[in-house]
Length: 302
Image (tube, rainbow, N blue to C red; front, side):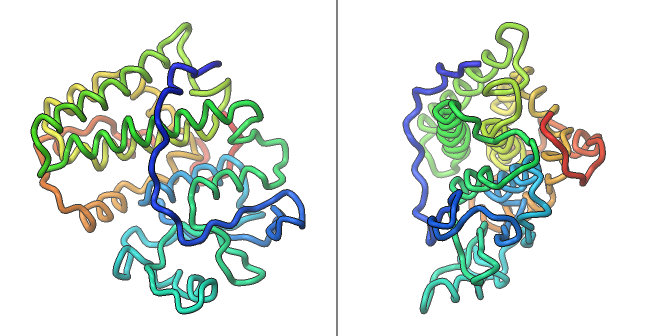
């Protein structure tokens, strides 16, 4: 299923990561994607960590690439984690920056491979898997990249600007319209034809992970800085929020949802003012997540 209409979005800007090694498919890469060598360190209260946790579960990698879960709230200045400090210091002499998650580490060397979440998710897709579907199926790379850019700029960045307390009212209004335009495009796509259950093709991919995490952030974080009228307009996309509900009930998604952790992390970092929209919840996320069949188990694609 083509998602070409979503492709005309400029690339999102990301902060340069401290480490950006890559896993390869053979030993010549220096980091072959072999089982029982690597480990992910993440917090599911962090959007990047939540994406990786979902992808890891969809790929069924518990037995070959374990996850170490970090606290929702970093315990070091600059958002760093004490638990990650030894890895950073072993990987860079006299490293002085914050020990940020998520991290992909090499248990054999005790060093960091990567701190760049998009690369880590793609590299997890390179691990051998027993018949499980790929997160980046061959031929879908450009469509998935288009969704990633759309979510980063059209949802996350637009929502942040729309709720920025010190922004000009006209700028906030323009950002809200940009956000609503993006949600409207996704709504029309999901309602097209007989209705679409997935964004790319006929199964879950990295595109669905990206959009679902963006919607979680929109309703649990950005909503708190918008007024009730704006939240009401955001909620007025029934196909989009029905899609979010369906994925919340999927074990690979819902079992990693830590609403309390997201809230504590947000309040620990946010300097903005809360608005009336904070009291208007769009979805009962935990109610839908509680309906996950076989909660906590690794499951195949739905």
